[in-house]
View 1 (cartoon, helix red, strand yellow):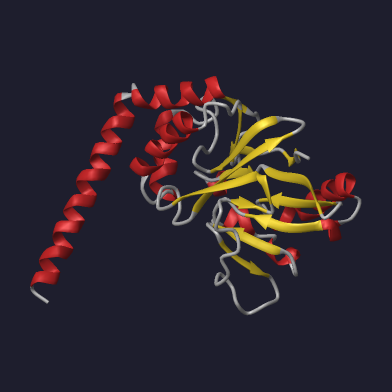
View 2 (cartoon, helix red, strand yellow):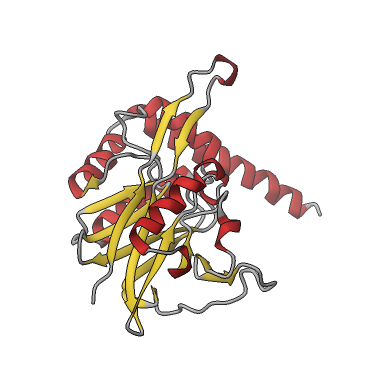
Length: 254
């Protein structure tokens, strides 16, 4: 039986209007809930944990669908930036998953267990792919073949939000502050578009609307055809090459 997918908290990303906090954003993370069946029992996985201030709302929304938070078996993380993980301590005794490194909170073996080597979690319809060192060190996307929404992908912050909410000049500023390698991140998006032609719905970290396949293509094309974005990527590569040359010289003199 295919799982069901729900968005139990819509994402938000808007500029903070508080003059004391210039340049900051009010944010909510898109939080997903997967309802799946195994061993003749309905069970649940949560995708991303969001921020502590929203926990009561998130837990209430989980319980409205699952009946009890105790039925949650996993927390699946797209990455470990602070806005996505503040509620992680509420998942004690659940399996926490990221980049095929798993742990059960409350035990000491954090990150040491690799229990899903076949690319799926518990059932074949809940798949993952690790895309390292783009937005963060361990970006993980989740590809779900669901009964209620068709095939969907949770992208995390490979896309923060749509370009109408964050124009390219502001996106560049965000990338400089928040991403490890914007070049890798940009090419990961292109690979996802080509690799998963059957997927029609994409959920990004801070976008309050589901992205269609056409939306994803338009996002990629808008960046590809934008001179400011290209110049930014070239400048990033140039800076990185200079840093590599510097450290190569340091090693040769070591």
